[in-house]
Amino acid sequence: MASQKLIKAKIRSTDKTRKVTKAMESISAAKMRKAQVTAIAGRSYAKAAAGILARLGGTQSLARHSFVVTREVKKALYIVITSDKGLAGSLSSAVLKATVADIAALGLTKEQISIIAVGRKANDFFGKRGYTVESFIENGDDKVSTLMIERIVNESAFRFSSGAVDTVRIVYQGFISTFEQKPSVRQMLPLSLLALNALVNEIVPARGKFANVPLVELTAPADYAIEPSEEAVLDSLMPRLISIFTYHALLESKASEHSARMVAMKSASDKAKEFVRDLTIKYNKARQAGITREVSEIIGGIEAMAN
Image 1 (cartoon, rainbow, N blue to C red):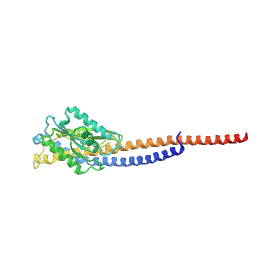
Image 2 (spheres, rainbow, N blue to C red):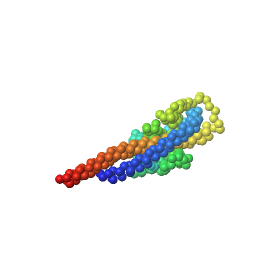
Image 3 (cartoon, helix red, strand yellow):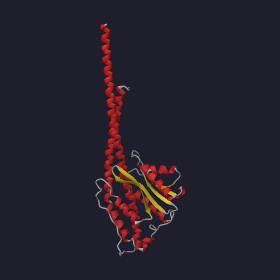
Image 4 (spheres, rainbow, N blue to C red):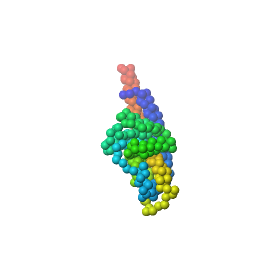
């Protein structure tokens, strides 16, 4: 049996670790809620932009726009959103597995796939496996910056409009609830009203404080006057719609990351507490055994002296 001194040192060490994981749990919970609030606050803007696309749904200009035209998929660009940090369970690995599965479903080779890696996990994963990583963007900050969105949107829009790729897909960890996240694969380009409508509605989590926000239904009217022209409106609107895709995917990923880390830290805190309890029992047993042994030695000494 380990000495009492060693057991006591383990108890102190484990208790210190539990305090750290408990603090990280609280911080992650606050950050998760903040990301949710930000996403809900931006939903009105996403709804308004999607509504404009719905009103333009029947126009010829929209059908001919380079961001909407559907082509046979021979090359694909994936925007893969992971984290720079660990301690978040299987968050990043689930996104990477979903990306690989979708690539396999398209039936394309590594040479036909290009990657925009958002986060070190995605960059390391695809870089080591021979994929072409067109751009690497760090994802360590808690806030989603406009510079990050612009880099992703400009790169993906240029490659699609120039014909370098035939589809652009974004893969991220979708936030369902505090204890549940699920990888999402969305086609960003060519842009469709159906995909945008799904994104706007998925901003609201399935369960939790914000789950009661009503769904949004987008419909196109029969006739709509467009000024100054259909082309001018579309050229201004399309990059913003892609930015909405990117922005909310990043927010969902951030909320999922903080949620997964909160759950992981809670589990670590509970395990540490349980381990301290077991060690305390072990320490008490060792202490009692030591006392019993000392009493036995004293009694044995007294009996020896009496004889």
